[in-house]
Image 1: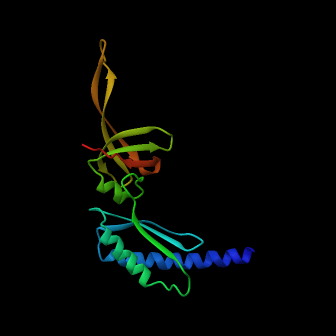
Image 2: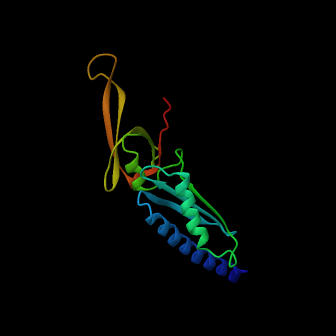
Image 3: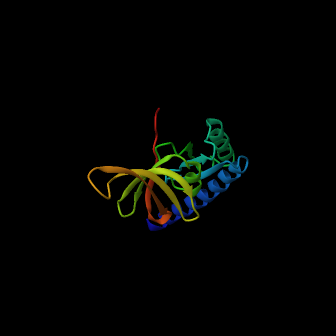
Length: 168
């Protein structure tokens, strides 16, 4: 049984590399698009998730899908293919996604379980800068005042970050 799984793993790895090459070829036609992730399940269900600096249209997904599908051989291995976008509610995974969300409110969960919600004001080489307002006790006397807060957060300390969707 072990040999069979090794063979399946080898085939999946080869197909995965081929799919990545085909997706990257398709993305070269529109440099505003980028790959978030690509997966292939053992039953050859291929899922490609893309995003774009200016969003992703259905037409963009169709172009990528057709390029991949027309260059894979169904006679060798039957497969299903899904090309989709990450969606607004999905966590940010790549630095490029953070850059396109500058000015939006992010909810960030750190690896130490702290949660911070603030406006993404800058994307640095190794992290992000968030700004928010907080109510704090007055230094003298009773009551509270509103203060501006900011935090520089390293990417390595971010467990999950999501753009907050606001309906006006």
